[in-house]
Length: 231
Image (cartoon, rainbow, N blue to C red):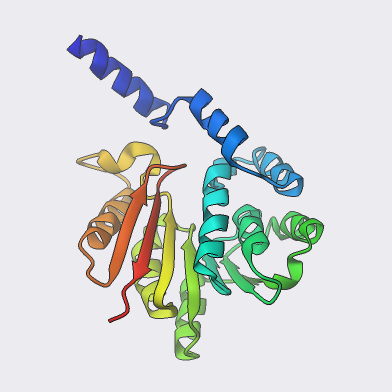
């Protein structure tokens, strides 16, 4: 029995998802209202080699709800890619809200903007191309503050993104980080890849960081939600 249990756990890890696919599909069918334009963008993005870099529909819906619950008006996103998460964010923002999204590569910006136009949210979104760390440091110098920062970019720079985000988010604001589980590979005791070591270190930092309250969720590839404490 023990051997069979271990076998099933290993198979689950190989599938890189702790939940059965049928359960995930059920949750999406019953608990996610994905706009047709967003769904079309997700399906379009799936054809690319890095298509799985997208957040899942469940994560998109959760992000959308958190923005509405927190009444976030000014949001910073690190990592645009095809604009899928930005679409969920833009829909959640009030008409006078603003999303600034950063990416080193604008290869897919046209398909992103097409979706944003279909949704009627493009006027809320400022897409900037360049090094995110440079932009973040510039925003700090300009004394800009955001209600929410969403991090989903170069994993090897996650600690830098997090530390700068703490300077950029207002007290009681949120920092949300994707890929904190990296398909379960964060459990590795001897990771060979630098970005895995960075993710493990980041998770250790946040777990005991008295500057934030935190909740890590096993949705998608792992979502960390941190609230900056008002000291």
